[in-house]
Length: 257
Image (tube, rainbow, N blue to C red):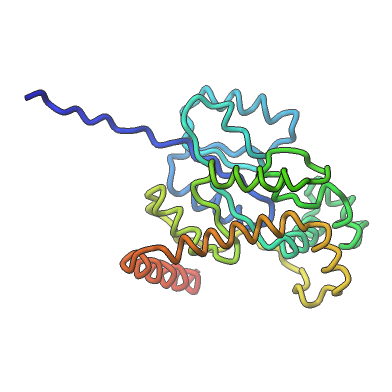
């Protein structure tokens, strides 16, 4: 009888599509604790520089790529890849982003945004349906059709192994830990927007305008949240028990740190 040779399958490249103001910085720090430093690359560049930098990274031994990058960057890499991301309630995300930029003097949009009201900020086409644009992989600042929404959904279903939800961060992290065998997942929140009013303190009129201008994002967020909820519900009894213990450990860790 011939000897069986077990060929270990190479783990796919993990592409963390870091959606702005969704808890992605916290996730980015967790990821860095689970891969060798030399194999993780952060890419936060504008469109012109992005392609060149990705071509450089593709020549290296890369296990994880992270940044504000639109879907589609996997085409640069020869190795198999999978995406992960976090989505957030679009109204919350825009409010958080607006106050975050205003509070950070070194942000490249700080000067411009400091002179704008929240209402003016959310009126800019570049700030509307941002999450769908990222998942779609383009058309930033342009109106989105029903076909675009369907394509974004298809991208999530086909290319993303975990689509987390900001207000279900621990559940999302648990699925990521299971998926990629991460050992080090204890965390405290990073990059939190301070000095921002709560949602109920914003005028109802402004909230309604944000909702109106982000209808596609709201639909995509609800779709992703339902998928995540269904995935958690379908876990077996023992895994659900592990999730409960996992959440308890994280809460205890946060209280100490």
